[in-house]
Length: 542
Image (cartoon, rainbow, N blue to C red; front, side):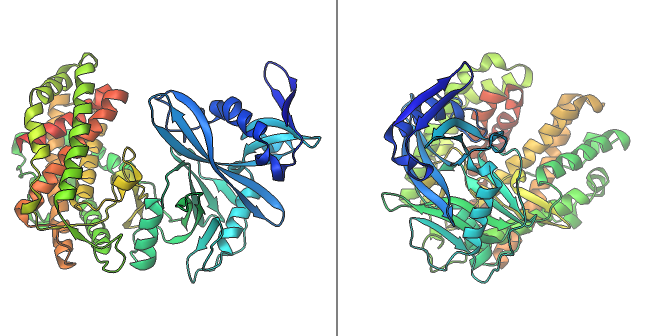
C-alpha cells in the first residue's frame, strides 16, 4: 500500500510497505508513480520527444530487473499516450538510494520503503548502476536466453571496470563512456524491434569488417511479453576524433568565403559546372582551385570513397535476408508514393499557414513552391520502378555531416538509427543507396547556407551574391563526390544504376529530402526555410 506520509509545497514523501525488490508489485505505487510523478518528470528530459504534443497518460508497458550480486535496478518501458491519438515508448532505468547527495541530479521521487527513507532516481546517473551494466556485458555468455539479454562481441576481452561518465548533452539517447575507451548508448526512445543502429553497426563492423565505423562490442536486449526482441543499449569502441564533419566543413566554407574578399574572386570569371556531372579534381579549373583550395575537395573525395565502401559492404550480403540486396518492385513503389504524397501534403499545409513568417527571397521561393505543387506532386508519383535496374539495400537512412566523425586523415561513420520521423519498419526498408548520397548533398547545401547566415556581416558581398558563390561551390562538391562514389561502387560491383537512372534517383531523393527538411524549418527556424526551398527550386529547374 502506498500512501503520502508528509507533504509541503515542494516535496511529497510517499511510503510503501514493500521493499525495493518488490516495489513493482505494489499496484498503488505504480499507479501514483506513473500518473503523479513520471508525467511531470519525463516532460523535462532532453530525450523526451513529445514536447510538441499533449500528453494524455502513461502506462507501464514492461519492467525488468538489471541486477548483479544483490544489486537490483529496474528497467521500465513506459508507454506515453498523447491526446493526438498516438504513443511513444521510452526506457527509464530506476534505482533506490538513501543518500540525498547521490540523488542530486536524477531525483524522481522521495519515498519511504519499509521505514527506510530515500529517493527513486534515474539509475543512469549512478556509477554503481553503470558498473553493473558494464560487467554484465563484459561477462556475457555467447548465448543468453533470459528475458534480459546481454551480448558481447566474440573474441573481444573487456578489461576490468575502471571508470564511467555520461558523455554530455544528447537529444534522444544517453551515452556512457567507460574507461575512456568504450561508449554505451542507451536508447531512450524504444521500438518493438531490434534497433537499426545495433543491426547495422554489428553487421558492418563484425560481419563485414568495415573499418570506418565504430567497432561493435556488445549490446543489451529484452524479450518482452509478446516475445519481441527490443534493443535497449549498444556498446562500441570509442573512436578518437577531432569533432564531426559538420563543424569541420563550416570552418572550411568560411575560409572559402573569406577568400572571395581576400583574393578578390570575381564570380563571372569562375568556370561553371553542370550539377550532378562527374568531375575529377585534376579536371577542376585553376581559378576554382585558387578560390576553394584543394583541402575541401580532397576531403569531399575521401568522404565519397568511405560512403561508397559502406554501401558496398551493405550490398555484399547473400545469406542474411535482412541485408541481401533486392530489386525495385511494385510494393516498394506503392510504399514510397504513399509515404511521400502524405508528407508533401503536410508540408504544403505548413507552407500555406506560415507564409506570414517569411520575407524577401524566402517568401518568393515559398510562393513558387506553392504554385508548382502539381508539378512536384507529379514528380513524386512518377516513380516507374520497371525502368530501374539498380539494387536496393539497407542504408544509413539519416546520413549527414553530423553523423561523420573527423579523424586523423580519415572519417568515421556512425549513428545508424535512421530517419527520426520514420517508423521502425520504414527505417529497415531497403532503399536506393543514392538516398544516403542525397542526404549528404543536402547537408553540404546546409553547411554552405549556414556559413552565410552565421557570418554574413564579416563578408563584403551582399547576401544574394554570397548565394551565387555558394551554389557554385555546391556544384563542385557534388561533382567531385559523384566521380569518386560512382567509380568506387562500380569497382565493388554494387549496382546503383546507369547514368540516367542515377540522375533520376538522385533528383528524386534530393526532392524528398528537401521536402522533409521544409517541415522542420517552417516550425523551428523560418529564416532558414530558404535552404530547403532553394534546394527544391534547384531540383525542379535542373
